[in-house]
Amino acid sequence: MAVGGEDGHGNLLDKVEIYSVEKNMWKVLNCLKNPGKNMGICKFLKQSKTAKGEKQVLIYVFGRNVIERINLDKVPLDEKWEEVKLKNPIPLNLSTITL
Image (cartoon, rainbow, N blue to C red; front, side):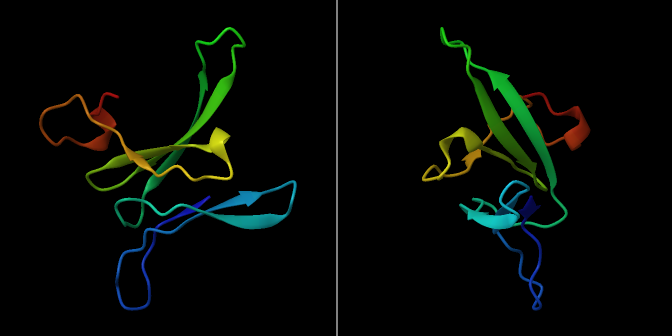
């Protein structure tokens, strides 16, 4: 997955692309709400509480001051990235954030 970055003029980007090994191609996803560079990415499998016990595939992007997520089970995506509301009342180092 490629997230954000910087163009040749120093402007931060909000672009997101994901690579499919099976199809050997990149796919453009919806843009982030907050552009950035040097962001961290985490894939999270969440067991659903339905009778079927389905799993959701969530992608989290850790920016400078914002965490965003998107549900990859809804591909093709018409869903937007969602900002994750933090429980910590003051800005802290990302290693200390509680989701």
